[in-house]
Length: 483
Image 1 (cartoon, rainbow, N blue to C red):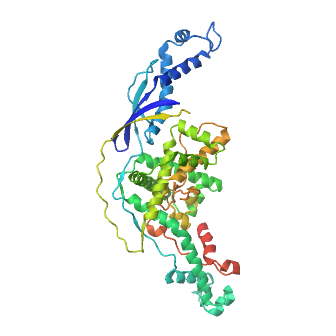
Image 2 (image 1 turned 90 degrees about the horizontal axis):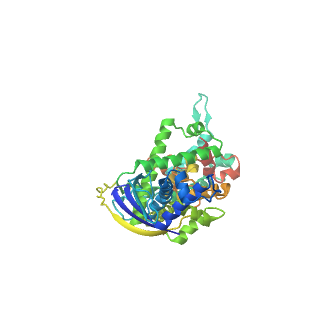
Image 3 (image 1 turned 120 degrees about the horizontal axis):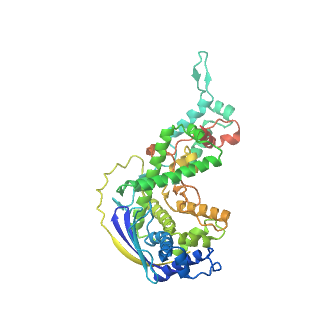
């Protein structure tokens, strides 16, 4: 058990200065470790590990050598712990102030500055309003399905002009094996309604996350966008590799140029980061918290063989704040969706954003005991309506945290206890991130207009076999994804 005292000061939005004091007992422990390591070397006249400190000082050029070794080890060990103790998440490398080396029998203090995920505000914390279509198919949608069905059976006249068959009871019974046109319409209507009902939860999640992000006051840090974008690229390439697809094939299937692809990935990362910051602001406003039991449950659900050991390693590397933040974002996203006021399409108008609020410098001092120990699937299925709408409230949320744990636990089982890497890519967002058990990376359509994310009307498939005709919209869904 170690005793660590930290203080943090916000220098500007997204930049903090952290002061660290390590107890003398821990400083002495690290100095003793430096001497023990040096004593393992071959020292004339002494067996390995038996040379006294004075001899080691003479052999290695003085005591300052060991003080420097201990100082380096302390800074490397406690810097991430100090960031975590202050509840901050770093976006860059720390810049250290000048400090003196460790002194035997004395507390060790140092300070550093670094870029962190900023604490922005929302222009309003009132329940959001979103327009959500009815699950009941419109007459226009039904007619579109019937037209698409007839186009499949188009023929040509003597002049080579296309001729659609006439939709009659006799034609329907002979060609599609339905009793009459009414039965066909009813079957199409039921299929459309089922498909729209399946897509509405994802659409609600998507629209909610977009609306809460619109209320964000302040700029999204470019470092956060880059980090999210890198994670999205990693997940996409991993997904393509798993499917044995090349990037060129993916671009061709989605009709994207390399430039459009890069722009889309960047826009998606920017939007995911904005959603994450908006959910952070809401979580602070609601005073949401994460209990130790919830944190433990998150690790137990990671799939690791030893979830407790995994938790200890994340704690020792100063990364528990990442998991807490993911859980808080999931809770905030759930609140947004549960309290959203649903309106009929076309009833809402864009409201002007509130002026940016001034951020005041805050300073806090804490004493804490610390134990020293973006959906590639959605990207590859961007034409799927439900996945296309699933951009993230939780991409920026707990699913991202769960993904990190899952990846860490996989690496853990492969390396038999090797420490997790300093950064694991976020999966999905919301979700980033989504349901807590499925991938939720934002889709490549994250920056498109809302009309692109509305559930599109499924086109009916031809009646070749009666089993297929029972759900004509579903058969066309798969065909769209391959186009």
